[in-house]
Image 1 (cartoon, rainbow, N blue to C red):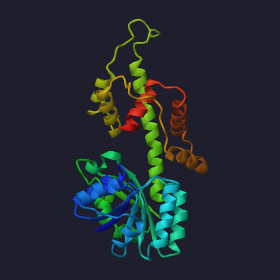
Image 2: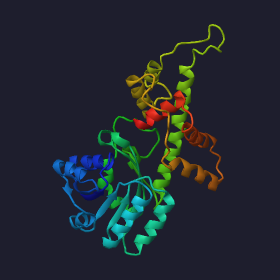
Image 3: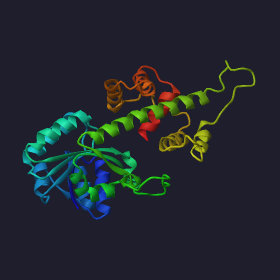
Image 4: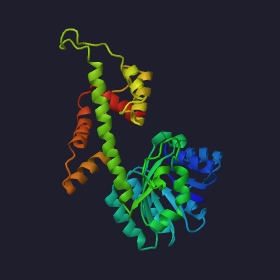
Length: 314
């Protein structure tokens, strides 16, 4: 299947590589000509500008935007809307705010252009592991683009089936969540939960690291190897996860995490998750606390902050 990809950063470029490896045809564009050149060498068709990418695709076109959320995405959607034809599809795979998706979809629908929002999880590891995809838009458009989603997704792999479930695309790592905006809404909550999980790991390892503190009762202080603890928890533990895998990697490379300042950025989804909880009157104290912890990390830095920074970096 043909796909245009705009934005060839760490995720966009690797998504193109994964698609081409499976036999899909990709036309690519990025403001950085060197990134375009790299993918041309790998077999993609590079374009010096957006109009060239559009001209290189057969109708109905499907163009995936993988640029930063906010103004860059807004401007690119507007640029594409001016040049695309009825029946073409704009796919936003970044971390856009779901309400912006609803507005943009209505704007481009006037021209007969379809809009699909894809919450994409997998980061820099997606080329090998695949990407978990949460997709919003018309069901018929989702089904037409299924070959793209199926290739990008992780596939069944070695994850055991859930007893009693009817098989769906969820077992392959991608789902149609609902109408426009729903994909990014689900991804937004996904990232809010990620904040909470990371915070729990960070605080737990901080307590372990300080178990030799002088204020503990006699005989109750311990000089614990947090690198070994992280590794053993990966194996058979109820709290094992990919985040713990990344934490273990970071600790193996630098047990003191001296290369991390503890400054932890937030990319927006955590804030939007809390905002959605407020709008729905749903209490979410853990998620809120994890967001505030990131704010505090920019003022003072603990080992927990360094753990968060290390996991986010990984």
